[in-house]
Image 1 (cartoon, rainbow over the protein chains, first blue to last red):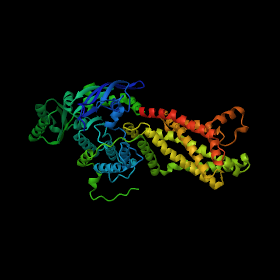
Image 2 (image 1 turned 90 degrees about the vertical axis):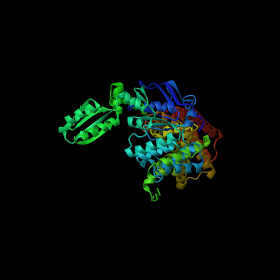
Image 3 (image 1 turned 45 degrees about the vertical axis):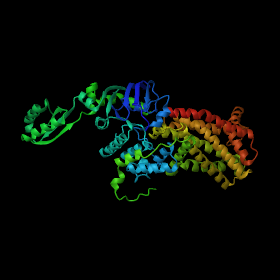
Image 4 (image 1 turned 135 degrees about the vertical axis):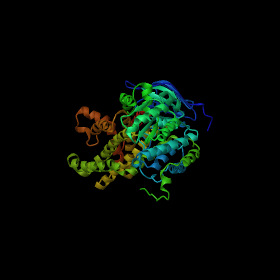
Length: 330
Length: 283
């Protein structure tokens, strides 16, 4: 790969309006080459519009951006030559078979007949789609469709890949497969810009995250920093005997701090970021003879992050932005 | 269609394999970019594949024209030309023109339907010659026009259509009609990008093409029409196309008519192809 510019994406002041709605309202992004950068936010926050501008599908109303050193407006064709896009709607042709889809993309990228077919078969094998290769994509499951979509994006390995909510609507197994494909891409040196609604996904995959709301970046940093700024997660314990809850609460309070008694009479929770301390507290609890039915250490959800950053829940933000999303779809 | 062979290790063939994915990622080098011609033809191939998977979509270019030929010949033949045989000689080139031009509306409908799907985003993000998706699908559509036209001529021959200029004349007329249809279909692809739903494209398209076709000499000579209407019919490019087609089939085509038809097709393409391409790019 030729020596990449140190910054894969540099965007400043991107603005895009649909009618009266400012879908993107001055977004700045700086993405280092070779990194995985997450754009996190609820539906309608402006994630898709941002990605579509960077992928040259939409022209920004104001602001500027360069992708891999090329201006997204003046040098759109050079950008297209180096990136690929996996959109929110699976970007594959439902009326063709899996194999035909990959051959089509291969031919459009300049492969001759035979190499295009060979490349399609190689990708179908690698993505576990060879058995379904002759089926029309409209009969594919969501997970298969998404894998085909990713395969179509790497017919030629892109230097930068845009992924718009790659796991939304997938079952956990398919989601894990998509994550492993993304990790393989990262290992090959591809820079990734990933839009997601899930903090867990951003946490698992991303080096840095920008939280976006109402078309603006409201927080930016590493996943750890972001979570810390929100105030970590919570240890939730459920007891065998509700009668022991007061004892358990005293013990946990001594170990970890203020305890919340939940509406479930056998459950209680306590804020805690440190898994080791949480584990010690649970061990202490069990050691003292309190019957523990179950426990979990939860990460803060996107909703908690959102609440902490904006003072409103992600659902509220979604409801507020519902119209913007419809405009984007049009 | 699917020739599934039982895999020895089903688990290994239905899931993505990270090692294989890594190998697939690293195993290719970038070929030189596809040429404009090659990418347009690839999109034409895509159109053909769709027909292969859903052959029913050819009904509109096969059954409908047969109905038109039979219906018009036997319904109006006696009244308009005195006999069905004589009217067939007059009407068949006209029906060829009408049927094929009606089909062009569907190019706009199909494009509008395509736009609602995610695959268009991929096409638009590829480093290809920008008109190629549109040009390619119109190349595919032209094959449909050719098929529809051939069906009409075959049915006509069965019913007793005997043109003087023979097979060469027939092919020349068919070619001229398809070229004109190609030019006209750019108007409907523009409409397909302008309007919000496939049914809106269909309605608006027919609202345009229907009167234009009937206010021509496709069905009757304009001699008996009111003067204003007659003037319109005479300059209507569809009349000129029908006259040229009759001339090519029966002999005695005016070169000027053929040139006018070709010029109108070129003009429509020159105006509407760049317009469609720009709108498609902008999304």
